[in-house]
Image (cartoon, rainbow, N blue to C red; front, top):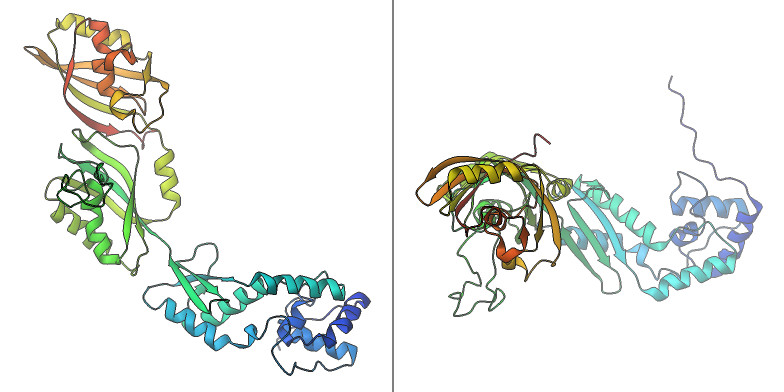
Length: 414
């Protein structure tokens, strides 16, 4: 025969009983009376705790004739709060949730006064008890799991206003993209003149460029999830006129306020392929969590490039300059073209390897491998002396970059 579970016991303590005796005449409901001693009687609910205390005192707890002097009846309206919570979440798909609440500061101050008056230092806050008990009831009604560490939706009960606010937590998808179009920015680029509001300069679109990698990847996923918008997190970015080739650039797409969470990722990957029409290719698309954003943003892998250069230079001299620079540090002051949006400072970077791929009349092509954050165009052209030594400086002739491709991001190697 299975051994009966031992019921939770309330520790006999004279100080607790004396505080309970002081609380009896204060007109508290059983929830608030029990909360005054929330750290005693593990395993008991607050009403059960109140009953055990009144029994130990030999004085039955008489319910207040009107609203509780502490919570003003807030703990007696569970059907209302649960109903409003479920109504607030009805437009969203969710299986994990957490509950919070906003209280009148005067009520919370009154709670502290009661604890001081009866000499109790074992109380549980009204906010904590309300959030816990609401969560239990929502779990019972929906089968969803209360999960404060990883919720899909967060409910905030505004008790003074009598309403429930809901936040649908973001969804995240990761993969690698290849960009084959030299007119495509990585992310949505608001019009500088109107700051995205729409004007004559941008034809009312609010954008400098018609679309972006972000938008081409996001459109099918936004449609499938019913999200309100996106944020695109890339492992660095390439210039608009540079292609991203090889195995692609790792990224995380964040979907804000999704209404639907059950997504056929394979179907969305195919929708991206069709919609991008050869401008962008995505591989390895999958759902992920928020931690992947940090991994992508903090990574600093080396990168391989192919750069086409225009300049009339003897090839032996080019090879000599490449041999000199390989593995050496270069000093790069923030380039002129990005100085308006990045701090003006000097960064030390290295060209790890460089060799000549092909050459023609007045032009040549290089393959390079460089540290993360190296400005390749500026290393070639010099940027008016802001990069030292530049290839142009080493060769003693002006150079111009004709094209730039990112061949590989070596994050899997490093």
